[in-house]
Length: 332
Ligand SMILES: Nc1nc2c(ncn2[C@@H]2O[C@H](COP(=O)(O)OP(=O)(O)OP(=O)(O)O)[C@@H](O)[C@H]2O)c(=O)[nH]1
Ligand SMILES: [Zn+2]
Image (cartoon, rainbow, N blue to C red; front, side):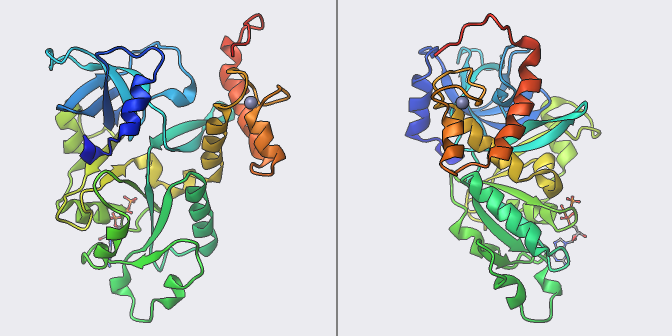
């Protein structure tokens, strides 16, 4: 599991869960399709289930890249493991989705170290790239810009590589396999990377170049689930070959995450709010006027935009409204 990024801190997080049982084990979610999960465990891949009907917060559903605690006897390898809890996330990538007339956050991936922002000379948009670099930094991941299709460029690349972005700009050609060795600095065994970029910039071509093989995605997924080609809801975490330019890193491929248009600073900031909320005095803090609110404290310190907090609170209110009982006692 070390190749999948397992660390002693995760073992501690698991045993530190208040409800942890001695037979629980850690696993990483390497494929998600609707409610079906494929897990990487210490003894290899296993199917996993997230029990339906469980009460949970919207952002607590296991997603691709998550580390989870699972129960299930090791001597019944054909039975899916039961996902009991999501272990503390290093970060999450969240997008806003429209539910009715409101937007609400949806987690796309967790525990991403490096975000490869793919662009090309034709796709280049400095302001948009600046926004994404900032969003990636906010989520504590490292942004790396890949300027693809440089095999088509005859002039000097300086106007792109020296554009003043707060992230490295690596000229590559995914199609010709050029420039990929420069990624070595960010890709290593146990490190997780995700690809984002507009349609047509070459993300699939790059994924194939890093994997060293052509992926037939629909076929790949139906192998696991028996579902057909119409399926488009897969999310996968691929271990890249050690001897290739991906150097044994893990690559998350998620159609939702790829679409740069739907993924924004707002999502990254929501992650920051969730993290801060763990330190609020009340476990059901709404981050309004409660004493000891860590979120409002961050606003007061100027570390968090008050408007984003308002937006977040609005979305939480909508999401929690049906279950909130006014007589519920506040828990510490
Ligand atoms: N010249 C050149 N063409 C490339 C390169 N990489 C990709 N292409 C071409 O660009 C087109 C789009 O590539 P894809 O890999 O499908 O792009 P994508 O980002 O996955 O696109 P979506 O699936 O729509 O998100 C294809 O025709 C590729 O052959 C490159 O390095 N150089
Ligand atoms: Zn609070």
